[in-house]
Image (cartoon, rainbow, N blue to C red):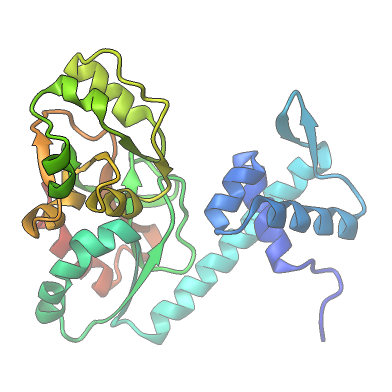
Length: 293
């Protein structure tokens, strides 16, 4: 029989993420839904409870007193639920490994190397989930994950794997039409941005090139989208060398200028401390750490 005191789980998840991040937009990104969906779930929950959980003040999202108290209890309950789920999954199959990985990293590095892991550990049943997250992500239904960020995720064990340099790349077809023979020639090209314009802004300052309009050019949410745009000759891209070597080897992109600029973000293998003694997790962490750069 359904417990009438339990609100919908989706509404609780939307509330917990919004309260923790104090942003409907960031909560939507984390849960892979739209901001409108988050707002709808919060409204449903507030109607169900008969009270306001959030208040906007000076364009800032804040918890009400009731919302703050409720957040503490809801977060603890969801954490217990996640822990119970991980526990039963571990008991179900000690030789099963679910890996969450950013899609670009999965395509450019993990999948080409995964055969080596499968050969070394044929008894481990591997499931790969490509996801759309950055450094704010939280694992809820995976044994181990690859994060791209700056490290130090609360409640998670993390080990730095790859840092990589930032490489300036363009398609051979584009370079044949508009050669890049000097840094100043960048002014004649469209710049492709990943996540934000920050990396290109820092790179231009590092190279000492003036009068380059950083404000133009498409901003892509995913590295693989920006790389595809570059492959199709739509501009010059700046990306982590860990993710671009495959395209260089295939001749789809050329490295235009050598730089010594390190990507401010790195790739990490992360997992819950509950999983630190799980044999498949230990095997995967040991294997991928051997490729550390």
